[in-house]
Length: 66
Image 1 (spheres, rainbow, N blue to C red):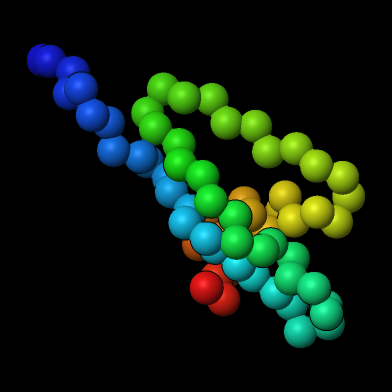
Image 2 (cartoon, one colour):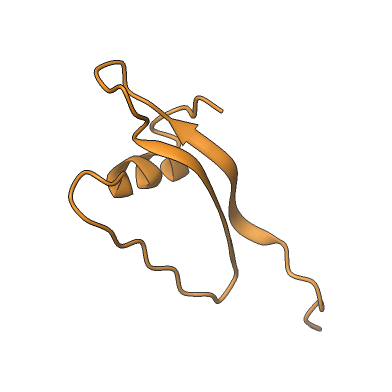
C-alpha cells in the first residue's frame, strides 16, 4: 500500500460560526481549521471561549449557523 502525497482532512471547519439565542456575541465566530490523518490537535482557551461548542459541532450534536 502506498501513501498518497496529498492527504484529505478527516475534519475540516471553514469559517464556521455558532451563536446561542441568549448571547449577543457568538459562541464560535468564523473558526477555520483542518485535521489530517496522523495529526494531533489541541483545542485550548479560557472558560466560555467555545471549546465545547466546537467539539459538539464536530460531533454533529449542534448545527452551525454558517
